[in-house]
Image 1 (cartoon, rainbow, N blue to C red):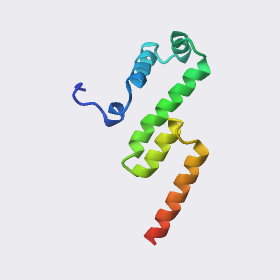
Image 2: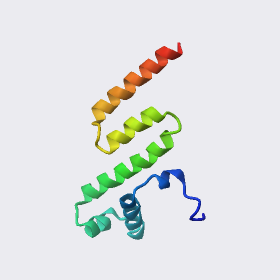
Image 3: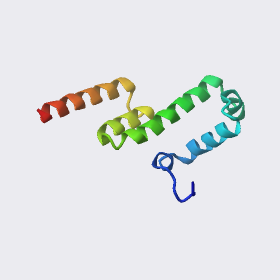
Image 4: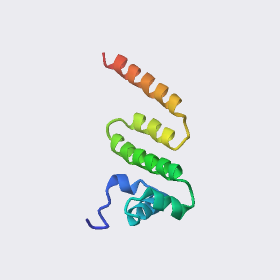
Length: 101
């Protein structure tokens, strides 16, 4: 893959996310080693990885429904709590179904 052809999901990551992925790969996927490098606990690194995975998946969801993807991104970045995000998405889908019938 040429550097000029960066996948969309990767282009949307910030520098901090890319640095984390680099460290993770250089540590051969060892979360314990990454935790040591960052000076944080294993659960903290696991949470960071889980959020990064969610962020990448959200990039894939964006094409399907931009509004739902936006709400999910806000929840992943802690700008909206998950319960509120679920309610917003649920109500949006109900309204969308009502408008289609």
